[in-house]
Image (cartoon, rainbow, N blue to C red; front, top):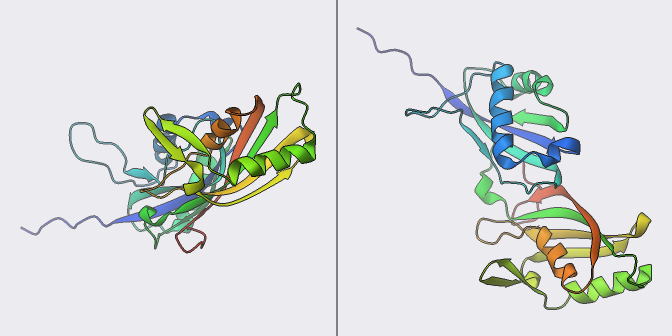
Length: 225
């Protein structure tokens, strides 16, 4: 009696955006949304073993609620012979508004190679604080180009200077300052950009802010894919 043919399992990496209303989807709900969308698209997905099998989908990292991103990645373990291009066409219409599938391909890199991430952090200071626009830029530069400590979590204080690879500060319209920042986001050193808002709020009353995730890099500064 011949043995049954083994099913070939391969990884397809999906690059996607998480913008608009989708930026308020939690990471747990994102996992569920992906599982439902993949099933809806009839992509042959490998499942875990055990009493509660679930589709094998791994994300590069968890994105904080409310942060828009133009460079999210998920690895899907697939069964069958479909190419990345074929899976891409299946997935595009299966996702809700704001989760835009950009590419699907067989990856050559591991998520562990991610080292840093570029964010655009927009922040607005309370109107009753009388600081001219050009002075606000100067004050923020003084803050971030010196030693600045925040509590990353209860009982753990960090110096943001150790986590900021590059930073440019400019004044944007509507009284928002733009912090164009490349931050350490490796497995060993990871900084949530909201810690920059926390640092500002230690000195100034923050009226509003929003964050966009722009690009991911490896340790050489090359764009991750």
